[in-house]
Amino acid sequence: MSLRKLIVFLSLIIMGNCVSAQLYSDSTHYDWNPSVVGSGPVRGFEASYTGVTGFDVGSKSEIYGDGKAKIDYNRIFKTKLRFPILIKKNLKMAGSIEYSDEEIHFQNSENISYPFYRSLNDKNMKSLGGSLYLMTQWKRNRYFMLRFNAKLKGDYWKEHIGEVSKYTFLKMEVSPVIGWKVNKYKSWGVGLAFSYTFGDPLVFPIFAYNHTFADKWGVVAFLPAKIKLRYQPSELCFISAKTYLKGGSYSMHFDKQAQSEEMLNPDNPALSDFKTLEFRRSDVNFSLEIEKGITDWLWFSFEGGYRSNINFDVTNKNSTLSFSGSKFTNKDKIIDSYAKGGMFYNLTLFIVPSKSLLKKIGLE
Image 1 (cartoon, rainbow, N blue to C red):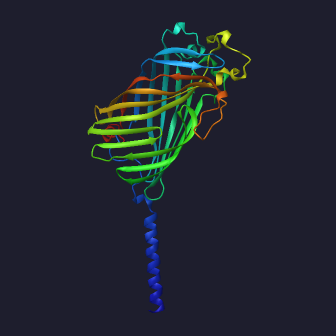
Image 2: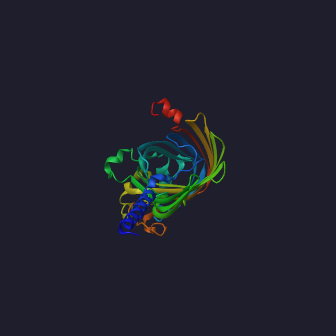
């Protein structure tokens, strides 16, 4: 072979390898979006009401002593709006804003003497904030997903709001995940979460899994927080069996006038600042949910099931975080409580950004 032919031959090999490498690295040719076929309706806007039936509570405290009572009802009203921010081939960003109001009412509240229950009774525990969702392609069918939310949680719409720091009620959570899209029916990922899912702020590993394994059946999991088995009997109907953790922390103001003088030691340093105490609670829920479309864009859902309590405590704000999953040091838990299980239900009306709806409002 002549030198000229050898140079041409080697050039073609090099060019071919470059083209192959370019095609291999051009990840836009691959399906990477973690959503799968049959995942169910996407909720653009929703308004919901949750009610929990009566249940018993009990508390122990070195400062307050012991207490027992029965909660008549626990209700939560919530609204949430999701919206797109940026949509590209290999990058998607979305956001949400939400507001909720929770109230607990005790049975025979006028006769309750335990200070924690008296202060908690009929208190409006509010949550106002938003979330940012980011999904980006990372080599072929691999993706990176990040969820960040920040909320103001507590009884901050009170006369004492000016007496505390504006950061007292701020709660933040973040969950980064690296995942793989196997095919249009299956995706999975692993990551970490800093969250109040267990009531206390903890860092723990997470495993995400979404799989439509049959024509009408599928499973979605975000362990250890949630797992759901779904069935789609028709185009506008989904039935799901769910198990999930639900937790949070409210910065609370426990009114001094609601505390009996003989049980309160004002010189105790653990109670020197009543406006930084936090009410932390978490539950594990077992439920069955039916989602039904009135039209392709207007849906409602009914969910009912059983709630088992994990955490129902009061702690001060200066707590030490543990990465091992253990709870905070005992000195920071001012009131250690338990709450018995009970039935709950949820009614939700939500809007799905379907093609027909987008066409009606001129966005498609």
